[in-house]
Image (cartoon, rainbow, N blue to C red; front, side, top):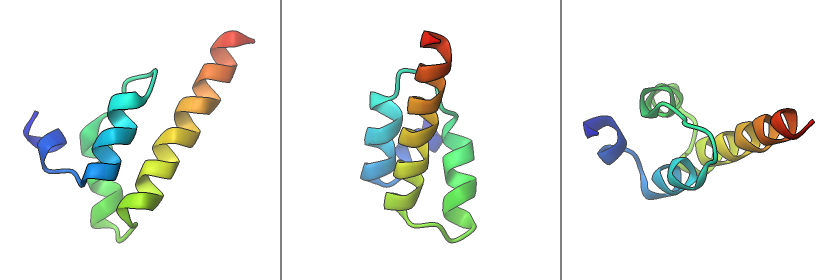
Length: 57
């Protein structure tokens, strides 16, 4: 829970609204590599959409 709480708001919202679980530590790793919070949130949303489509197919 500490890792989730340490994330910026856009990333927390993306993880919370995702249909599939996304590990907060992965998001932290992306942020530490220099990606913006908005970019990380977009990556999470894209991965969630892709997984949703795979499950539906």
